[in-house]
Image 1 (cartoon, rainbow over the protein chains, first blue to last red):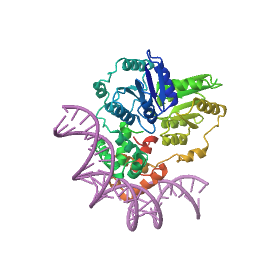
Image 2 (cartoon, rainbow over the protein chains, first blue to last red):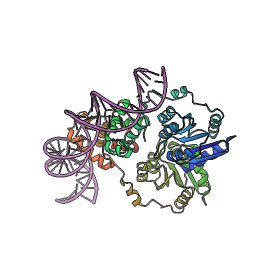
Image 3 (cartoon, protein in one colour):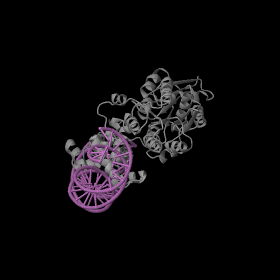
Image 4 (cartoon, rainbow over the protein chains, first blue to last red):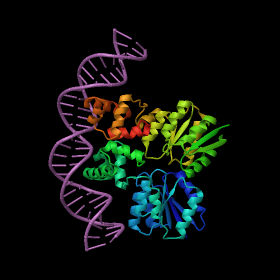
Length: 203
Length: 203
DNA sequence: AAGCCCGTAACTCTTTCGGGTGACCGTCGT
DNA sequence: ACGACGGTCACCCGAAAGAGTTACGGGCTT
């Protein structure tokens, strides 16, 4: 009994993915989830053989979900879904243990091929080299937390407000801010936000 | 001959949207585009009655596309597609002249209902009240000075540094900053820079 | 002529930021 | 087993930002 879990916040995309995955030979069941929390809830009761998950989702993001999922079950096989821009999100997810990624630009055929391969070979994993090759220039790699803090800044939140939203102390937010400034080479939060936009880290 | 143009960067979402829209009574043709540039190219040759367009797209974003489209043809009817997170993007797009928006979380029924209404009533427009709820009603028109100050901020300059560059006193820069914050609805310089990028005022 | 927006500038006052430093605890890789 | 890195938190301190207010001259519109 081979089952695949598809997670995307858009019902339309979710449905399209579900249908595409369902046509892969050997797949008998495709379940869906709308966000990271739902994936985690569902996982404890009903483990699928493979998870396809969007990187960017409201609430619990894809990267954080991967981390929690793998800390609960290191054997989980996860493939990230992403748009062209956020290479960093992909890198983070793969670093966190996702087996690979699929562009949302990918054709149905590519999607099916990747799912087929992942299901056929339980140890399948993206070659590390492919990550570096798509690593354009010297893209600064921010951690999930740092991106969350940067996003908070881009919405005009103060450090204290960001802390409240992420359940962190203001001092911790400041630490993340300091570290992401250094990584980006930013002199202050306005600069950091600008660089975030230029690098495609936030929108 | 009623035709609708669907624009989304993800082929899967695009296809799903195309199919959903095609089931709306009265719709005879649904064309698709993958990005803003394609929409603009297509528009000059082949005008649809309605456009459904993603807010977030690589390259030319949804907001900027709306502006260009409407400056070329003020009668164009556009509905934005968005995810839960970026209320800012939606507000900007609607302020720029989009008739309304649809969550990507919307059900197929909601999607069809909105498209039906928009096609039936050429003057249909999202109630202004719903706009104010997500803030910013007026299109921000920054003066040359204000944009120069905003650009300085996006390069990590302090007010004093910006003043030195523009041969102004720091206090004058602060005045410009205060005024542009108010126009943009920004709570601080980081937010202002983010809004500047989302509006395409800086890059 | 009156009103409005823009550019310039100064003043005060409070809040926030950013840098520096140190610390503890996981995890991961070597 | 060790070190590197990431996440968390704390404290200090000076610098910067932002809000509020006032002011004055110049354009442009009504």
